[in-house]
Length: 222
Image 1 (cartoon, helix red, strand yellow):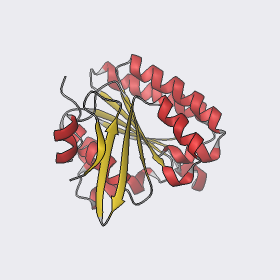
Image 2 (spheres, one colour; image 1 turned 30 degrees about the vertical axis):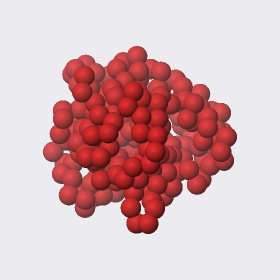
Image 3 (cartoon, one colour; image 1 turned 90 degrees about the vertical axis):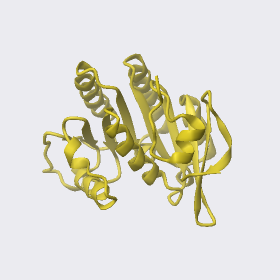
Image 4 (cartoon, helix red, strand yellow; image 1 turned 45 degrees about the horizontal axis):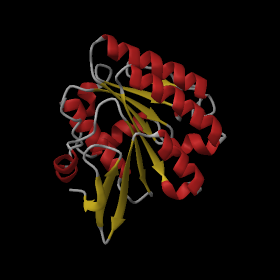
């Protein structure tokens, strides 16, 4: 099966895109372009008839939709049908926030059980419709800040294992500057493949390890 295209020509030509059923960790600092990588991936994956469950931990679902639209990505046509949001942020600042047809408001980053249940339920809805599913966590760093890292590791082991059994692809982003090296290494060990991004001299670069088409030296992302 052809890989999931990211929308970046250099990445897709060198790697073939993301492999289905794998767990990807996307590492980089705040200036590395992780958000742009994810947004391009979302646009490309939805255009190729994939379904996406987007887990938010650092912004509200309305802010996310506004960001997509501001980047020229018409996400509205996919909302509910192929793109669903698990908002693990809004209730922290707005206790009265309520669900709608495409966004479920969760209890906050401390409730990993609630997140797991909601993720499983949403995944099941897409799988029943025979759609390839991608779970995207934007981003994992907030869960690591609010919870004991060991608790987060166990949570990830459970949800990623369950996702792979269901044929679901998982990608989570991590801000490298926010965590100690032992936390970074443990997250890497939980992943099948690692994508590293960096900004250098005004240009963004990537490398990829853990797949059949590795790119072990940084290449420009374009």
